[in-house]
Image (tube, rainbow, N blue to C red):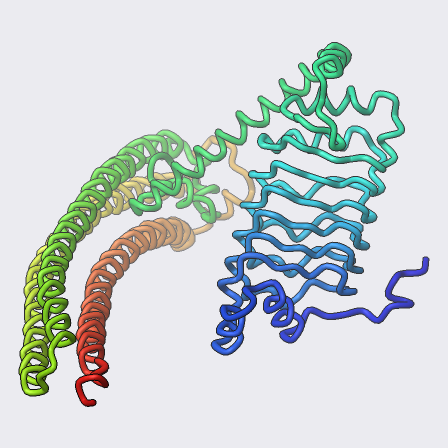
Length: 523
């Protein structure tokens, strides 16, 4: 097969090509000259046209994070890639290229219009993330399986579809099939779907579509169930009590305990184990329920804090704007007075007075900022104390409940050891009539072996309990530290930004005053 770039030199998307394209498509005349002088920031570009450039590979577009429209048609592109950063893309044209597979579109969740017209694509797939797709053109390709159209049912906003020029269009049932399986479609191959065609399609495929909808509903129900399970688990993780609402922790104690599995054959052990499990799971459920309640209290505390924070900021902004508005009236009056005066001495006096007003404005704005800093410092410190206390109480109570789990384990260990020693004594006296597997009976060769086996099982259980407790405490403590640190750092950044804004604003006022034109007065 002869490829186009065997006779044409392939081009690459480099910095020079991108700059040239942006400049040509950007503002012209005076605005364009200013843009060229100041430099063009690719991250601000909304539309980019790279058609008819003999481009072989999509590359170097990562800076165009604000791009909404991208035109790459009439090139020699063979693979869709390099678009990962273009998350704001709405319109994409890749028509008239050499693409064989649909791929590389996973991050384009805002895409509404996609053209893959006149390529070499044989199958429509790998577009699941394009949930906003409305217009799809994939005509003049190699799609030969009419059933592939069913894939497009997932795009609930799809209203215009072009498949003209594909082998499937030769099927006499093509239009009826597409209109029946895509009932929300309005335009097919650039023609409005008439009511008669839609009715014929519905009648012909009604039973097949009924079965398909049934399967889709089952899949959707399962998906929603899985998503609900994931969401619930995330809620539990946020409370640091995941997998404590059931036998998960208890089962994990025995998942790697070989000795416990052997000892379970002893008479009385199954009943002992069941009692232990019931009480252990009950304590875990108490931790779980308590954890969810405490998480809601922490969330409420954080929400109240940020609400108070926003109220203080809004009030401060309101006061600051009032100061600026009042000053602006005075400042404008001074400037008008200065411009209308022919007396140099009078102008000097008024300029000095105006500069003093600017200085007083600076003092008032800085005073407001210092008052806000003091107010927020008190609010933040109260929040910090409250959240640390809440986490401390939570940790203390969890430790108490985990201690109950350890007490249960210790009690179970004592009972299990007692049963094991009694079994050993009976075996030694040949008074044990129960059948035991060989590996279990091997444990009862002597007392040390029995004690070691029971002790090893006990150690594993305690370690699992300790690790779960450590994980919970570490995670909630880390959250507490991170939350408090973020609040302090955010306030520090806000204060620095505000002080910088005030200084820049006052400097701007003073500069405007200093740069007033007094040419007529000097003449």
